[in-house]
Amino acid sequence: MPLLEETSERKDGRRGFTPFSVRTAGRTSETGFTFFELIVVLFIAGLVVSVAIVATGRMHDRAVFNEEARRIFQTLRHAREIALFERRDVTFRIDEEEKRYWLDYGNEKASDGRSVPGGFRLIGKDIFFFPKGNSSGGLVKIENEKGQGYAIKVDPVLGSPSIRRF
Image (cartoon, rainbow, N blue to C red; front, side, top):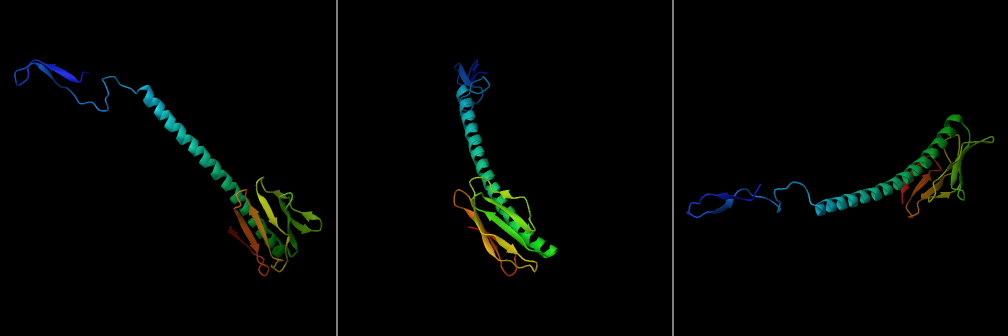
C-alpha cells in the first residue's frame, strides 16, 4: 500500500500526490520484523533468563540453609518431648568434625544421625534433656560459607529451644 496516492487534480488545480495513510516507525507496506529487531528481542530475552537462573540458585541455597536450621531446632524440641513423655534422659549429640548430629536415648540406643550439607558449619556441645523437662542448656550454631547463621539456644531451666538469626 503506497504512502501517497496519485490524484487527478488538487483543489489548487495542480496535479500531484496527497497523503494516503499515516505510517509509524518508518514501516513500509511489508509486514514483519527486521533481522535486527529479532536479534535485539532475543538478546533481551536471554538476559532476563540468565538473571532469573542466578536468582533461583541463590534462593535455593538460602532455602536449604533455612531448612537445615529448622531441622536442628525441631530435633532439639523433639529431644525435650521424648525426655518428658518417656521419663528418661535424652542427649542431643554433635560431631563438629563430621558435621553430624543425632539423639542418644541411652541404653545403647540412638537415632539415625543427620549430616549437614557441605559448606555449612555446625558448632556446639552435647545437650542433655532430663525427665522433668529441664536440660543442661547450651548453644548450637549453624553457619553458611558467607558467615551468616542461626543460633539455637536451649534454656537450662525450661529445656525449650529458641532460634535467632545472626
